[in-house]
Length: 212
Image (tube, rainbow, N blue to C red; front, side, top):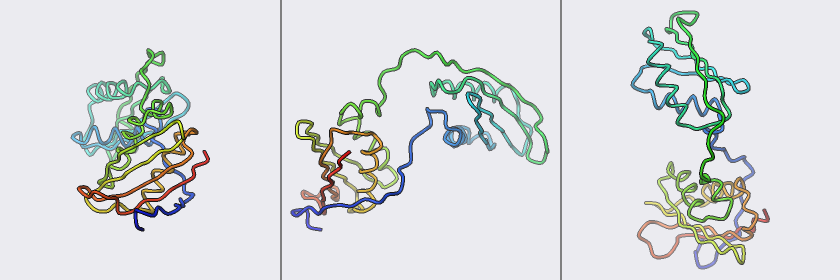
């Protein structure tokens, strides 16, 4: 599509995934803890019931309860989530049918007021916060974004840049669903363009009437 004549874009209806780590989502916590503890040669499975989080720690070798409990407690405290009050750990060797040990600790739920998150700032109309969120989601595509917002007329322009020409259909969906999830009601018109880094003009562009 010639960038001089933006097309009217359509987006798919597939749901956009959330980023639920600090909301206490057990799958997100499980994935994050496994990434943080790769050197430990263990696998963590997380389940949650109410404000209780239960972690099963499995390893080919017998795990030490005290150092792992301390390390996981510090990691979970760093999330500053107020949705989890109690954490239970169960350590088990792979070949054993039942855990070799268990321990528990509490997490503070009366956390001090935190500064607004990037999501909150984006909902308030901060284009830099929206750009930072979008750039995070574009990492897997090897792309970055530039945002131009005019709140007076309710228009937003998003330029996606990559080493190669960004995929128009897939990234249009990504931008639209991000915008929808953030519930930016003041954005009525959205223009999305894609260009190769170093190019002066975009390779494609299109308009969406968001009607959020």
